[in-house]
Image 1 (tube, rainbow, N blue to C red):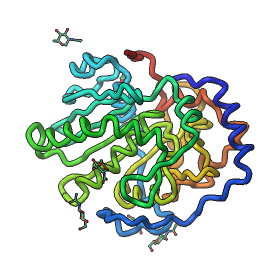
Image 2: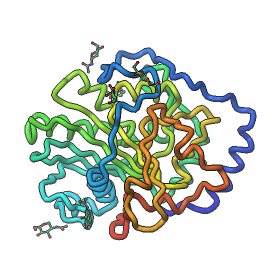
Image 3: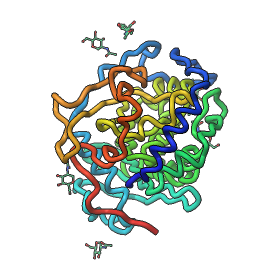
Length: 318
Ligand SMILES: *[C@@H]1O[C@H](CO)[C@@H](O)[C@H](O)[C@H]1NC(C)=O
Ligand SMILES: *[C@@H]1O[C@H](CO)[C@@H](O)[C@H](O)[C@H]1NC(C)=O
Ligand SMILES: *[C@@H]1O[C@H](CO)[C@@H](O)[C@H](O)[C@H]1NC(C)=O
Ligand SMILES: *[C@@H]1O[C@H](CO)[C@@H](O)[C@H](O)[C@H]1NC(C)=O
Ligand SMILES: *[C@@H]1O[C@H](CO)[C@@H](O)[C@H](O)[C@H]1NC(C)=O
Ligand SMILES: *[C@@H]1O[C@H](CO)[C@@H](O)[C@H](O)[C@H]1NC(C)=O
């Protein structure tokens, strides 16, 4: 999970090289895709009055940290962060090419289907080596980071198969599909939530949400616009000066999905409170939130602390 210090160098160099990049459009583009709109209020900076519930997000954080554990204890619901006694995992996810890891499960009492995705120990390679190449998001005009898209594509069939299976037999009344993740895992979580929203969004019985921690930028402004219409009640927490949410740079044509929650609690294990967090606007790039942090203050260390916790326990590696 620790990011190599040389990531900072890469970023500063990239920023310097990118002085000639064209600025990203601030008005979101409407992509050529039929998106079931879950909200009628898409075309401005409204964040749909999203509320930030610390306790709920701490639960989401535990679902995310669980994804770092040994698949056997995830399946057993006995991992250190497996704090939900009503949770049943139905499968773990792993793509050996992209090193994507996650799991799918459900809580029948809550009516939740959970997809949790873990970060990568070499996120800096991800952000540097893929050269910020973008590929088309399916057959839309939107573009997404090639590496993140490959990572989701590597686990998509297994993940969507588990979701379909849960809805068909294990928890037919489940009504909320929630994706969650940290770092690289949150990029995968974002792509997962959009695919699932496009698949189940016409079914008014199932709503899809994404709740992420330390998420990098995944796609361009057109992608953020599709995302906002399809998965409006989503959050991505940014802890203080965490460097990862600043990458890849906006100047390279990337644009964050909404809605950021910026938590400025100190770099200790203190959870967010009303004095430390701010729910940002629905633009994805609220200039009064983490976008206000100057480049020289971006920091890898804040990336490891979210919701007053860090991943003390599980660091499963193949
Ligand atoms: C967005 O649009 C709604 C409805 O038209 C309006 O009430 C709201 O003030 C607008 N918000 C912003 C930030 O422009
Ligand atoms: C947000 O809250 C305001 C004030 O309560 C309300 O007028 C508006 O309709 C709400 N917007 C949405 C999208 O729920
Ligand atoms: C899973 O739970 C069973 C029953 O509690 C136990 O026997 C087994 O050792 C557990 N496996 C792991 C990998 O924790
Ligand atoms: C998260 O997991 C930790 C470690 O098991 C536990 O102490 C804590 O109560 C859990 N938090 C929530 C909100 O479930
Ligand atoms: C994107 O393409 C993949 C592979 O063809 C497909 O499985 C998936 O459902 C598509 N997603 C959307 C949202 O159309
Ligand atoms: C959802 O509805 C839209 C508009 O009617 C349609 O184009 C799209 O194919 C539907 N998606 C699914 C998965 O049924």
